[in-house]
Length: 121
Image (tube, rainbow, N blue to C red; front, side, top):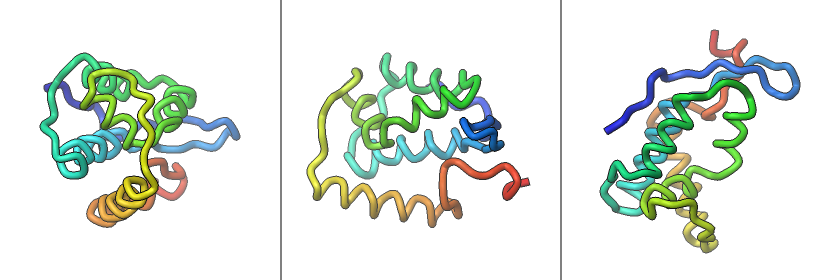
């Protein structure tokens, strides 16, 4: 299976602030959504490769913004279905996702996938 090249991606946001995108943590979170939230096996399909390439080939803020435009739950479903999906989520599923997200952040000792550069250095 393809993996993420580097844990962190340094970029400048639209306001000129330096930020760090924790791409490996984001990838890990999406993978845990697949295996633990949806209880599916991760299969290295075309969409999985597409997603890994998106994370590995980031060049600037627009790339991070494109990934963050969708919630990780969306990316997990896209990998499971091997296509861009337009599926929506019920209120119950979204509440379960929020709880799952909080647990992931606590287990990984992070508050966000995007950090201020000044705080983390």
